[in-house]
Length: 426
Figure 1 (tube, rainbow, N blue to C red):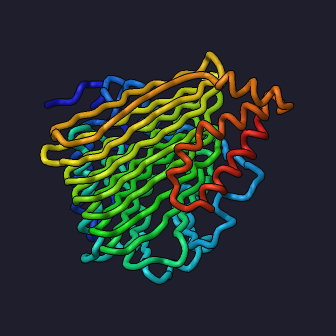
Figure 2 (cartoon, rainbow, N blue to C red):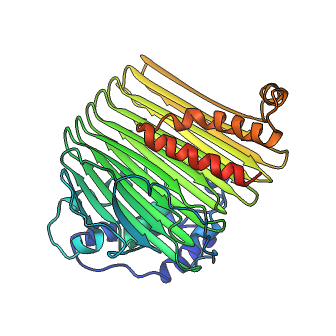
Figure 3 (spheres, rainbow, N blue to C red):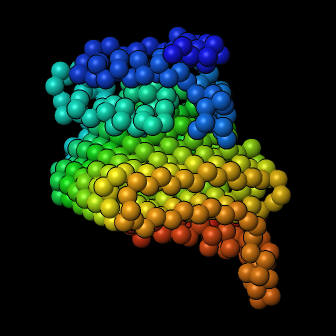
């Protein structure tokens, strides 16, 4: 079926401004992804899963400019002992990065493995992204698979002594970065990956995660504080038997952020938790779109998303739990909530359940409201200033999402950073 004229023109203009990398072991995957983009077309507001979020600036040929923001504070996670992998405007920075050698894990650049005819990542690159195109088209992810020239492939074979930290630095006010990461956690292995930084004026990132039987991966992201940045991120994960995948994302600032996650539980007794917290002020639009598929017995999934919005900020949540036939004893939980600190902000939610098994425990809920007046009165009556009391209640509201972080020290660091940000906004 031919694409509508406007979608066809927008897609052609975007593709004409890009160059498809040639050769290497990923060539076939790139060409297949390009074909998917051409067939689907890039998104517009007429697409069901984009009706709450305008994708215009994410698909236009030239990246909108975004001033580089200097927070005047140490980057997130600097206080932790970790292996640091740095990208500046989407390009690997070897001098700023640590040595990539660490026991229990191997890390290589996409740019390096592209010169090899045979590599383990060839069997994964673009595979989970392609699976994630059904039943909902995700053309920005396919665009990423086709054109990403940098990123890392990570293979976890044991239990590394420290986390891997992917750091994204923004250096140019017109940068347009595309990064693609592939993570394979082998049977019985476990690791933690940290991500932080604004990355670029416009950022398109895709991460494919394959967790084998008995493996575990914990992912914690802190998206950068640049006021004018735009980002579309895509997370695709496949879980084997008795495996664990937990992800948490903190977002503060940014004109437009769209975080998509597509999780498949394909092995019995698997566990997937995905959570997020955002604090938005003014010209801020934040969209979490999540699709979790239960395709095995006795699996557990949790979606916990909290948004704090003020001065006209907009939050979006679209979350779905699909329980396939035969996926008995599924435990699926989904909650999305917003705290509106004024009458100008808005929260748009679309929670969904689709169940084809009869022995399940699934629930979903979505609420939106103002600050707890009773709690605010209680704190004020004990001498706490109004702005400090509001911040305390805001942190309490976000707590359920932050508690999804497995590592208590990392969770505490994020809360401390949040406290500082809120205090400076008073």
